[in-house]
Image (cartoon, rainbow, N blue to C red):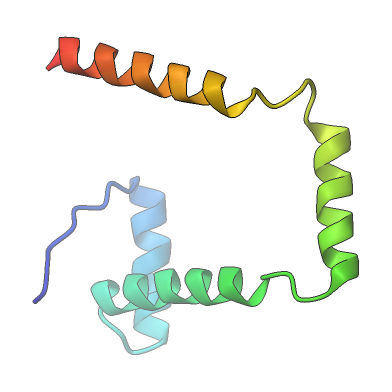
Length: 90
C-alpha cells in the first residue's frame, strides 16, 4: 500500500532536489525515497560492533552528559505524571 506524505520545502531546496532528481533521471518522489533509504542504510552501518567502539561511546556520553540517571521508581513516577497530563489535555 502506498501512502502520500506532504514534505514542506523552501523554494531553494525544492529547486536543488528537483535538479538532482532530474540529473539521476528520477522523479522527485523517487529521489526523496532513495535519499531517505540511503540515510537509514548509513545509520544501520554505523552500529557498534567492536568492544572498543562501545567503550568509546560510553566514555563520550560520560563527558557530555551531566548528573545522574534517576532510579527506575523515579522514571515510573515521571511517566505516570506525564500520562495524567496527557489525559487532561485530551
